[in-house]
Length: 258
Image (cartoon, rainbow, N blue to C red; front, side):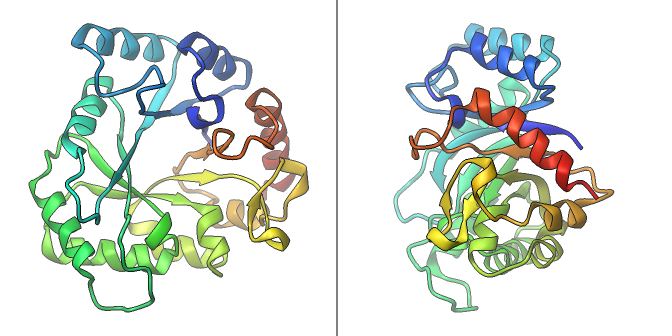
């Protein structure tokens, strides 16, 4: 199974360090956090974009996503197109977006925010995918699947797919098998991390949590979907560094493999 990581786990590090981490840990792909304090951002010139793409491709790596902080359901206008252009220039699979709906209840009917998402998907360029992460208002697989079904019905040929943050769906009471069954029609890749359900699903070091990784791997057996470690060190500085966590994660996966 292909294994990637997000540069959220090494925020602010230069490209050279990221490439060395990938080379040292048999990594096949990257999620590139797009922000002003990273080497990936929408302000890169055409020449800088070409150089970044070339260096990553020369290292034998695939860019799974340009990770934006665009909220597709938000009331305010969100800068989606510049991120889509950046992802196209870098040869990435797509742009990670959040749902970000202001309605977080369990109502099954479409919300105003979901209708805004329909409009934004309808008018967005379709050269690269919009990658909706199971996050915030749509952390549960059931909610995300309902939104994707709405897109299928109203925007034929849309280019939206799903990043399954498997810890988020688990924290909302779904087993990995349940979430996979809900999300599989739109699934692009799967984010993994370790968390502790006894501490309100707080992110923890790989050996210290209770995420059911074996059940996740059983659900994904025989599928082509890559796994990507979303190590949220920027937001949770108590976590160990990525240099320690990547080999620990590989051992975690190996021990849980079907």
